[in-house]
Image (cartoon, rainbow, N blue to C red; front, side):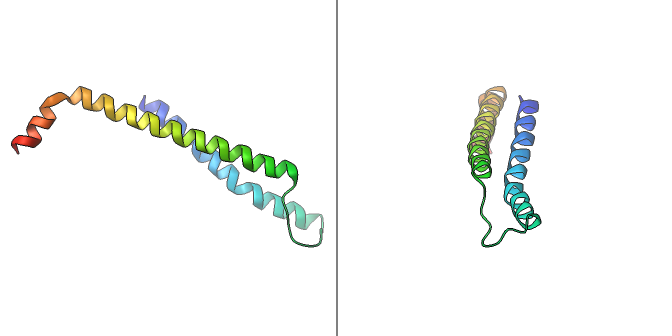
Length: 89
């Protein structure tokens, strides 16, 4: 399960990185094409950003869910002995 969590976090990091690069790539292409006026994303780039935002949200939720499951399993494995130790200490 922890391996799955690491994989999810890695994919989420890649999605975030890709998301942040969309505008930079667009700006560079705008400048290379010598377009005038204020830079604006193309409809395709806007869609890429929207899709990336949805995917990032899904991965964040997935990571949070896996982290919660791991915490629950660890709590079950540690059992009541841990809470007894805390109460007696």
